[in-house]
Structure formats: structure tokens, C-alpha cells
Length: 303
Image (cartoon, rainbow, N blue to C red):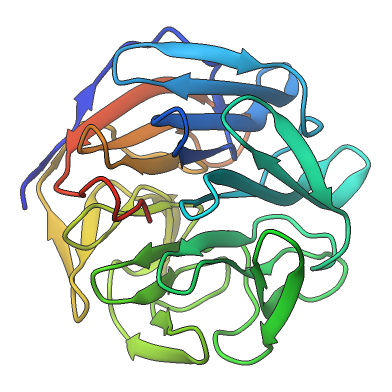
């Protein structure tokens, strides 16, 4: 599949990074929440319909960054967990029902940031892995959320990490995990019971990227890549077909870290928003919106 990113309007949410996107199954729009902005942490909620961003709520979770979102297609909710604010790490769970936010739990995984979540459409659970718990070591635990409670389901598999990426691949009935700070370039899959390392090579050592299912495979875009010469912003889009990573033609969004991406299965589009265009020193905040066509089908669910 050739990937051709197209820049859409640049009017909408303020420029930011370490925010998150997820598909709102009630409104059938891509939802954006929070992140680091020019004037500090953000707690605003926006919806993207393919042409316009609309702010839909200014109450809900406190302003934060480095949290995680997942779209629960069974219960028609967007689930949020954790993140970081000025007072430290957070351990609260919130849900968006298409009209507003409600806090639904304050117990479960311990407080953390830079973790990852994805919704398992086969087992009807939101899955969470890892995260930053400084001064404790990065987490290596796996949790699931069923809409009522969190359950720890594994404490072995990938090494502890933060700023990694996860997405669910409903075609292959597996959750995919890639990257993270200080992690290698291995690819891991979760089948609801066990973690399995399925590839030792790929886009390279990468963190703070964006990952989502595009209808054919799991797509990885942007982030910070690390090699023997140091760190740099990754430029390119990769796709996982269940066995191999393949770099696709990529014209458009350019290198950035802390961006966010989600699939819109109703319109058949991958949506990417924001990020930080600079490594080291003051960040260069981005507030641009990009799309490319995807074959994901409504009812299958975003990654």
C-alpha cells in the first residue's frame, strides 16, 4: 500500500505534543485530548470530522501529558489512563461517552506516564503495558480494563519500558508492541494470555512514535530513532503485515516526536496530529493535521 500523507487545515487545537488521539465510536470522529502546549499542560477535548476540528468539552480529566487513550468499540467509550502533571504521575481512569468525560476508577495500575494502551476487539478488553514510574524502574506489567475494574494479567514478556507504541491488529487477532526508551528493535505480540517476540528487526530502536491499525497492517509513523551515532527524528512510515516491517513511500508529515495517530474506520482515513519537531532545547510545537487513505472497515475498529 502506497502511503501519501496530505496536510489538512491547520486551524483547531493548539500546537502540542505528548497528547493522544482515539476514534470516538459514538460521534464517529477522531478525538484529541491534552498534551504539552506552548503555555503548559492542556486538558481540552476536540473532535475531527475530516474537514474541521470542533472543541467539545473543557471539563473532564485534569490537564496532563504522556497519558494513553484507547477506543472501546464494544462499550462505545474512549478510555483514558494516567499521565503526568505538575504534581507528578497520575493513576486515574476516565471514559468519554460521546457527550462528556466521567472518572470511572482510581484504583488499578500504579501511577505512571508514557505507557501504552490498545483495545482488544476479540476479547473486549483495553490492554495497558509498561510506563515511566520514576524513581522506580520502568514498568513491565500488563493490565486489562473491562469497564468495571483493572486486572493485572501478566508481569513477564517485554522488558520494562516507556514511550513505546501499541496497537491491536484485528485481522491477526493480536496486539502489537514496538519500541520504547532504552528498548531494542524487537516486535512483540500479545494474544490475550502470553507475550511472544515475533521479530528482532524492524524500523530500528525508536520511541515516542505513533502506531495504529490501518486495515491492512499496523502502521508506525515518526518518533525518535536511536543508533550508534545518537538520536534523530525518524522520517518515514512503516507497516507490519504480521511477519515483517516494510517501509512505505512517505511524502508529507516529516520527522516529529510525541505526535499522535488514530484510524477513522468510517471515513477510511489515518489521522495524525501535532508533535515536537526538535530534539534537545526548547520544543518546536506542531499543530498540523495530516491524513492518508486507509482500507480499515467500519466495525473492525481502530488500532
